[in-house]
Length: 238
Image (cartoon, rainbow, N blue to C red; front, top):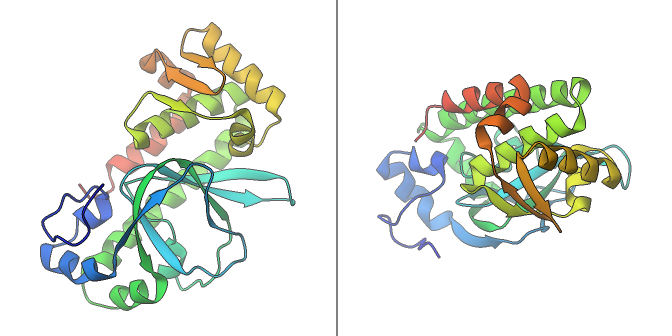
């Protein structure tokens, strides 16, 4: 567990790590560490955004809802960014559902305190603008992928993006969860996973997924994954 009361404690979120020391110390009293539990809903579509979240580990998925039971993932946020950037843009309610896709920890901050800090003439607003551009690039490229590429290619891209943010090639994901992420039926999820397994790119059993051949999986994921990764590499935080 990461300490939140010491200014010299390790900082795992890349946005927070990029802040000047003095600016980070000013934020520190407003930051609270919380656990991210798999499947937990951080935001409900249409609900007021009370907190913003800076993941230290784990992943939060942003899902758009077409109907009550129909959702599609439009973005993934890990330790490279923030969940709740809409607050920075002047929005008080969430346009998406936000669900923990990979368990871990996050630093959360009340939206009111976050807005106060954003009004300061510091580095945070500049970093948030750049992260917003990176997230928009991810969302737009994902839309192209959903429209033009088969489900197994989309699954390959999604697994690689998840692996990058979780720092592991092995994770547990149910078919129901993958169905919501990819916007396809469970049968299509299983078929896509079987195709990738037959190509010896992954091992898949009872929700446990292991990437066994990452270079070939990156080729399977087409240009979409490379585009998103290149955009994130240009994001000027460390």
